Image: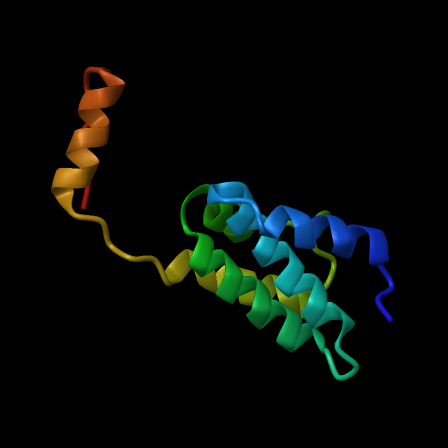
Length: 114
């Protein structure tokens, strides 16, 4: 039996929604399910969080990266260690994509630094 029945029900419903909200809800549900497994450890939970952050990409991945350095948000050292791996394991974006975003910002003085 789940320790968080109402939250799990809400996440199950939200995970069925289309688009980003559904994706994020499904990821949160997957992580919560990992925490409730009988043999769950900080290591397995951290790996689950990294897997879900990588799948979500974008801002959610960036938030998880930052959480790896925040003991006030994530007390467990092992989980933070897993989240910190997200900082070094990033896909390199093509210059054209970055330059396109820079044009949208319409700010002068922006340049790509290698």
